[in-house]
Length: 170
Image (cartoon, rainbow, N blue to C red; front, side, top):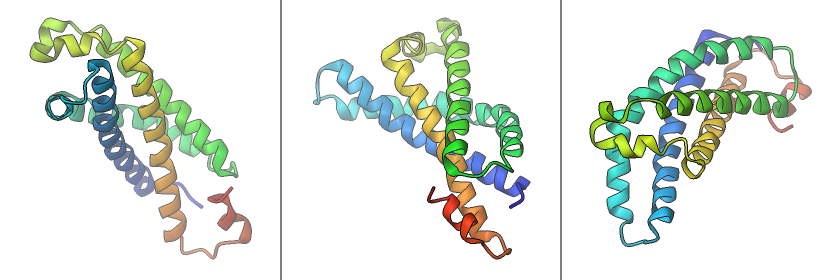
């Protein structure tokens, strides 16, 4: 199966959407646990959603475009590698690296420039926030690859061999 630009963009968009959905869920859960109260879940959800709309959506879009070059290169390198596990591990590793870089860059961003989100952003390098976000990044990139690869195999007009059909089950 060829690795085409269409598959690349499909995977990039799937990664971006997955990251933003998981970010909202995981960040709300983490902040709720830190607050030691389930009574403020709705308030935390509203805060996280606002933060996501104002900051995360645009930063994650930029990270998707910038990190896309690495993802495209990795996809080209792995074209001849059989088996889903190797691809998932490689793309999850790419997600960890991209997430780590984003956390490091955002962590040194001056809190004075981020207005009401300054304290939230200054905590991003703390393990209780950074580790879940690294997991979100790794899962998002791996899932983006998996989703687009499975769609590409379905769209491939070439007849599938038994080996090709089992690669997504592997």
